[in-house]
Length: 178
Image (cartoon, rainbow, N blue to C red; front, side, top):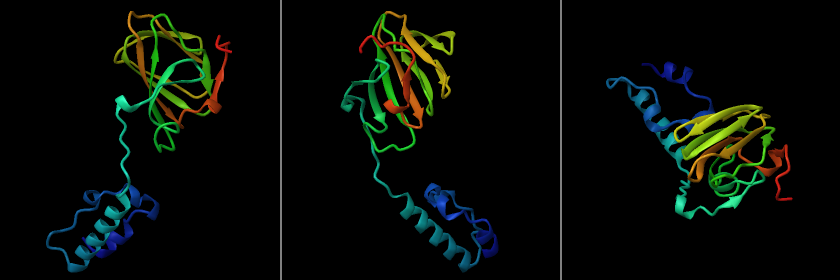
């Protein structure tokens, strides 16, 4: 491999943060000293760029709060709990016989991963039964409501991108908590 190959195929500066030292192109072990100098420089740059503070949250540390749709939330990552800027990850708990208030998000795409229990999801008028292990995609603008139809609390891991916010949540029925 020649120096010209490395220079022509180097990544744009904005992508340096995504490089790991092991992800750089392989060089011929018998390559020139110049190739190995470039490799050492790229490794050092990638290592410096990847240094960041790791933020880990334990479920035991998460304080529950209630969102506009009425579900009890424990947020692992997002504006409330951690420095995640572009997404959020939380667990929603709906008590036996309970339901969220029908709502939609203008910008956020949402994933519901059922961790425990059984529910009935209404998504833009279409009903689906969901249970532990099921994942539902909720596109931006889709009105949705989730009912707990099981005999235990319904626990759903919710991922939103962009991150969940009350400002992006619009109720389509009275919450009963007004």
